[in-house]
Length: 627
Image (cartoon, rainbow, N blue to C red; front, side):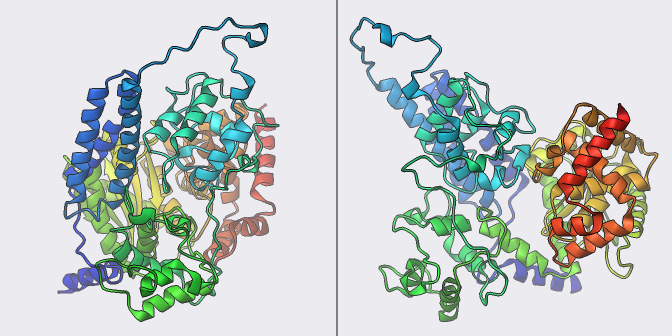
């Protein structure tokens, strides 16, 4: 009965206010279908380049049939983010196919022959000046308008567009363009197939063609410095700024958007105003889409609820009342929308391009008790394991502080569970975590993998990214979920440090808002102090030496965004290792951040300087010492 009561509470919490349908969980086979469909669509540009129009058409038709089956399944809500992404990619694929078919049927026009004059002569590989594409005037504004949320203010996928140098460097998987080869460049490919940008509509074909032409012309940079911020690039004359304008909520507003309004939008409005073809081209899956509006223009006028189309539609005073073919919203809820707009239509979330569904889930999870959140994470652990390793039934060990899920032998699982208990106790003591509370609310899930292939498949299927080949484990904390991954072969090489890093990293990031480089570097630094003789710690130290010797700068980690790997991870660890030796100051910093203090101010207050200055000084000392 107690178990039934817990799951009843969870069901109520996750129903998210008046949800009209039952949430069904997708099977591993359905997730696999979605992943394979996404992968197959990436082959479309190659088919079109090879003039294989019939094969390309079959591929698109098969993709539409598969998507239709997934969209009509009972698990469509669970598959929602994947379905939305696939809808966008298939729409882009159809546009590419249509363009290729028109090009195939069009009759070539033979221009009249003309004797070139002296003024017409120019080197064969040099474009006419009128056709030359400027990076600062033509290309940079596209990136700052469409890609800022993920790749300028952040570095998702290890790819930063904050500067031209970052664009040229590429992502974790390598460079994204080859000068002179626009059509074959990875950058053009992901834009053409609709994979990017995410969280908004695809780039218009003319903008994609412009980027491709710029690469064809040599991908030249015409700014002052490749290290200058891209956001400073001018916007072309006559082109409206594409960035969504919004006002950040202060927290004092009587109505909070994510807390009070987004749950109902997700449960009631997304069916019509989401996906590939939202009704009236009004996409409400993100706050940015809500502010953009649709065919009728903006639906919200901040400070003027009476003039806002949203209020008129909800009240039924402007055409058909919304939501269409559903009961009208309660008067009390409409009044909340009215008040929210009157107070400035402010946004109480970090990223306007984050899906509202995810923001609501995080909000619900943050309000759960320790036991409720632990139960939900146990369900997520089972689901994620099936998604990453569908052919391997896992062993599970439930501990007071963690859930261990893995495909090791029962004996090895018990050994690893004991090592995890030791690591957890050491981390809790080092970080002076309250002894009368769990180390982390909702527990930490530990995924243990017998083979490297199992580990990398988890990264591909669950996190949708390629994990670096030298990683033996990593951790993630998202409020909703909290887990660590560890490679666990028969020997214990690197196990102690990896487990300590997982527990320390998740605990540190759970304390409040901070840059990822700090959580990553501090977690490794603490693990190195707790397991100084571990083979993995020696590897980390060697990576620091190599990064310093290569002349890497602090920007490798300070501007890395959400993904810190390679030299950036090594340098953040090296920088924070001596700081971790001053544990009282580090703990004071964490307490301030936990209490809501700004990270940079807390860092400077307790450690005597801003991160950039201290990191530069540390690198200078290290370079001098090693020379």
